[in-house]
Length: 154
Image 1 (cartoon, rainbow, N blue to C red):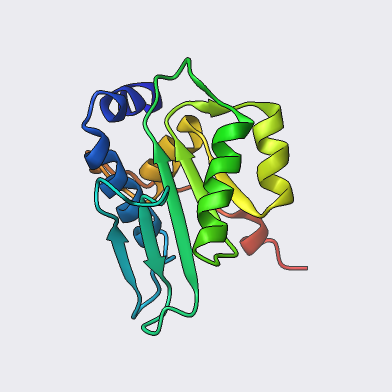
Image 2 (cartoon, one colour):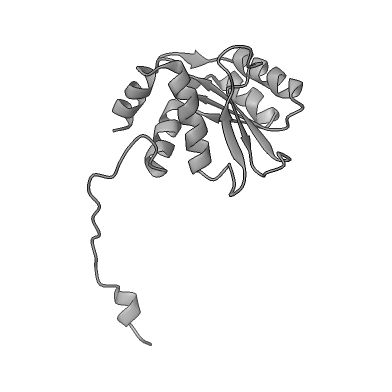
């Protein structure tokens, strides 16, 4: 399912992908109960694709970068450095870089040093399934077994 879901995302419009990641992080709770989540304009976004204010005053803000690449593409360190520069331009202390592909070891190391969270294509689809974004539950089953420990009274 994750492979098919990732391909569906890759085949979608880049602007749609930006909306998808903002919706996903909102569903994950990053928006908070009274915060806001927006996708930045297509052009002149300053290297930021989405902004999530976790509270009504915007004192806790998460900035997003969304890159919809083929699964064979590798996000390299310069792309993370560019995002870090965009974060610095906003005076931001945190950011999330989401891609449909994967990250090089040097990109991962650089992101870790500057508190940038990286979400690769596999993690993205896993999160979409967990938080039911872009998917719907077709069947839901519960399977019960007897809890022997419950009945074992010492």
